[in-house]
Length: 307
Length: 241
Ligand SMILES: [Zn+2]
Image (cartoon, rainbow over all chains, first blue to last red; front, side, top):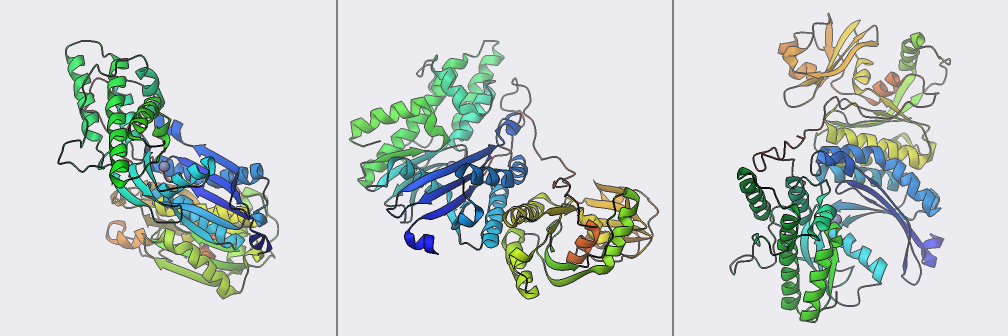
């Protein structure tokens, strides 16, 4: 109570929407700044590798095993006693249902045991909040492109406290999922993103004209579709193999990656321009893709948008 | 003592008081006897059970706070947590187990895992008891008890393939659902009760064993086939966005 009155609030956050058990501890100071005290992650990525994608049941099993040890580590690293925690926050969705359930049950248990409030958090809103911890508060309405193994969304964000407007999302595979699946086709390890990125640096982006999903004049302007692209890559590789010709992994990786980031950036810029927004945020695992960053940078400059 | 089980469609929480008269028992052979002694002294002060296979996540924590309130026990007065570790359908089972593990950590008390079938057996009278619970997908989890001790199982199988272990009675929700296949008189509770869980846990004075779920089934996932059959190969399940 007294701490809260002074304005210092310690919050423990739990995230289990996909294959990582994440526990973060933050201190929000009186002046509104937020300090990250601990950010502990247990990943089940290795267990999914042999399946070439995230298997929900495998992820949920790993969350159960990792939950308490990860909370313990986070408290240790943050040097925070349980009695110092003023609130618990948890990803309430969207994400893998069974995986979310593990994090939510744990968060509820900690909250009732410590007698502190529990906050359910929208996963995409949390992605944007992460950006504000790094780069300071949102100073103006922004467009957020969130791309990961679990989602590909375009969001209009006016402020952290205001509801997020979802302008568009994938209608089938998430972008990161497409990377994983194509990596598998190319015999690259899981998770596919970094490996395709690396392979693509030696390939020709224009070597193969893979389709750009949902970019026709009558298609939903802000929605994404990557399932057709994945199939096109599969067909292309199959045809090559049928002819007994080697598959040029670098060219396929580069051309596939170009098709994904071309659509992502094109639609993001268009959504920003249409909404009169001059700031673009990119978040999620796929944001680490070097070609996505480069192309987004170029196109933002052209459109007069800050990245 | 706080007792929790979510290995069946029942969302179960209870506060159980144990008399602490049990003599310390260390050898394997006397464990069952100790459990029997405890059974006589495990008294449920408050119990909440809701049978709804889809409500574990929603109802368990409210059930826990409700039983503590009814028993007039504060969280910091809980000495230990006993939790069913299955076998049971995975999603619900995990809710109970992660709740128990988190509460145990948050409160600094030990968490004891109990085979959920043992908890049913603890309240089923009979010298040779077959405990059968519904595993969905037309299968059951089962274990066989003789003189109060588990002598076979837990395992998962189709009801028609239950081995003939010579049991005289059957207990558990599976024993009711598949009564005509099993052909044994049904006794005892359909689901684990808080008192049953605590009884089955035996003397709670040692270091808890590793707290791990009894899944008995592997995750449903297919490893990708060879690279040759690119689009015809098996696909991994798609994570929901
Ligand atoms: Zn995410």
